[in-house]
Image (cartoon, rainbow, N blue to C red; front, top):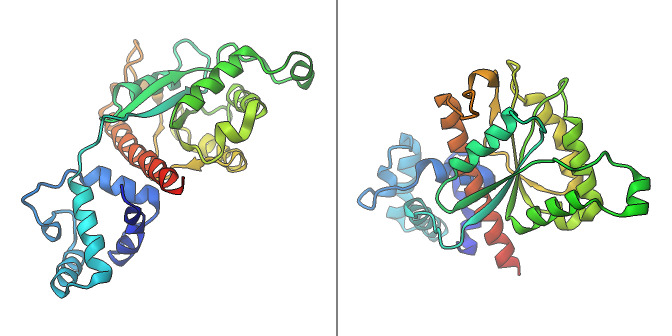
Length: 274
């Protein structure tokens, strides 16, 4: 991806589209690949005004727009490059053997788009945070192992339950321990997504919202181009833990495509700044 890719926000603004990096990523994931024999202005996803804007600027050969239009056309025809896979760690915030959230993490693993590899991790073995334990014994081995898994990945996907309208204590405890292990290296500017499943009718909307202040403090780069808030999870998964609800599968697939683009954008930005 070239540096000019990051200027798509100007073109998207002119087209009346959301123009944050995650919104652009989600748009590309949704509409790619555009057939080579279809002109960009003739793509079926534009409304009449958007198509007319593209045609006029190309006809006028307006230099401030034609380059961006050509780059967008090229980006929409790209297929994922799987030579260097995007590595994601999906961290389940539940310890239960038959956890719906661990099942959701494994569903994401099985549905990862081309070019993305997802590893699933849990919080098993991490003790309750105790400053005396840290002072006397250092960071526990389970925390150091999880730290190594996150550092090896390009992005973090948090898969959170919801307890009493808030963040699960076991998950917060794990994140607190990780922050003590090296907050900056683990979290600062790390592309991060958050999804979750709950047996309630509202999914995990409250717990995901409750995570926001913590994630802001940790300094992650949070993906907000989509959401996965699985409600009544007991009806969405089979007894064996397979995600069987088709609407949820479709939503999860769209989220993963957008998240993949978001991570790629973050990687390209990091590379161009180096």
